[in-house]
Amino acid sequence: MTHPKTRNTLYVEQAELISQDAHENEQYHMVLKAPETSVRASPGHFVHMQCDSSIYMRRPMSIMRSSVKNNTIDILYKVHGDGTNALSKKKIGDSIDLIGPIGQPFKMKNYKKRPLLIGGGVGIPPIIFLAEYIKDTTKNLNPFVLMGSEIPFPFKTQPSKILINEVPADVNASMALLEDWGITSRLTSLKNYAGCFNGYVTELADIWLEKLDDDQRKEVEIFSCGPTQMLKAVSKLAKKYNLSCQVSLEEYMACAVGGCAGCTVLIKTENGNEMKRVCVDGPVFEAETVIQFHN
Image (cartoon, rainbow, N blue to C red; front, side, top):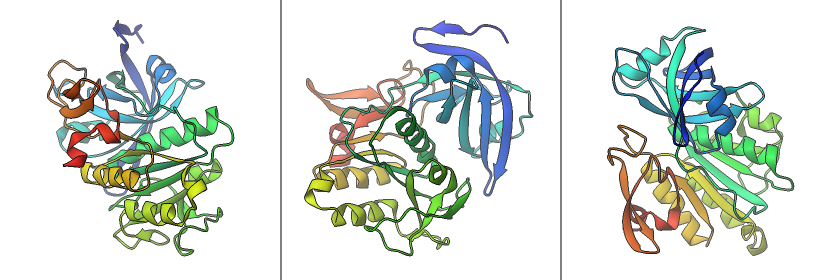
């Protein structure tokens, strides 16, 4: 592998495909050996991947896990178009050109005792990364992870052994990996999957928050990633309960390194409303600053 070339704070490197597992509904979990990216990645960062040499446009992919020890990053994606279809055909040992890590990550600023992590659909990977980061770098925090999907979850699930008094007793589906880490999680879907809350992930979050007492709610801050409408509902929840909230936006990207300004959103700043690029100024913003959530 040639030594990566730097582009300011970004790295271009030839990552090696270590493993790729297929899940239902054309979902894939790949592990890449990417030393320069793995050592610098934080929850909320993404990489810009060249899916195939014949396809000019790269694809932005959120990082789901990063191991400095193993020099690896994990990527979870769903086939949607020629690029990701080509990516799914990659073999062990193949080289994948990527740029990363890109963007502004989640920031643990308040270190409140009960961080609430909410992920929906393709927004699930950064939430898993953040949960692992909290586990590895903090003490005395008790994160609660909620994840929603309308297709089968692309990971092992199991009935949770961790009881939560604030959610219905029959809602016990959890992510097995988080359970192994001792992190409480619950899954939601409108597809009536076993043990899942039958509704939107924000509805279950509302139930949980409503049943906390005032002192317990003061210990909550929200971190979320997912579709725009879900994030808008998360923002309303944060406002309802007067909670700090960071959201990772999902927007279509072309260059993904701040050059084309094709992924701009209107953000409230100290100097008034300004257009910000989701790729490099975000993707993580304070929910209260995202203008489209408050129209």
